[in-house]
Amino acid sequence: MSLQIFSEGEPCDDNDTLTINDVYDAACVCKGEKSNNVEITSKDAWVVYPNPVTESLIISNTAHNLRYLTLRFTKLELETTALPPGVYHLKIKTNQDMTIKRFVKI
Image 1 (cartoon, one colour):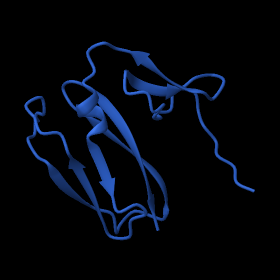
Image 2 (spheres, rainbow, N blue to C red):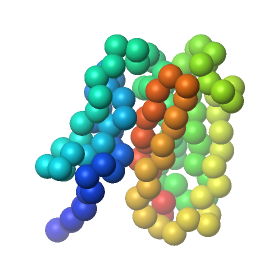
Image 3 (spheres, rainbow, N blue to C red):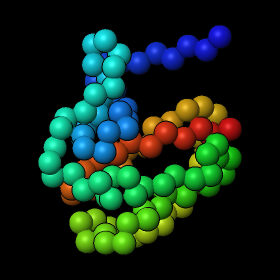
């Protein structure tokens, strides 16, 4: 058996490319705010790998146009050796939107 505990207001990803600021509501349902300003390519272009990770996590953006980013990069390596094993949520926030990516540290 597996249990997961979610808190109201905890970030999540509702897998709806037209929403932003996804969080769990009081009924533990992941919901986001509807927005016509979200660029589908910017939110969905973020990739986090390998997953599960042991030493280094790669954060990459596959979008061709990254003008909206404050820091302009297409690939970033995050050292994870100091993290204890577990499930983590990585919040990626740009000037245009925010997305949460889940990864497992083993």
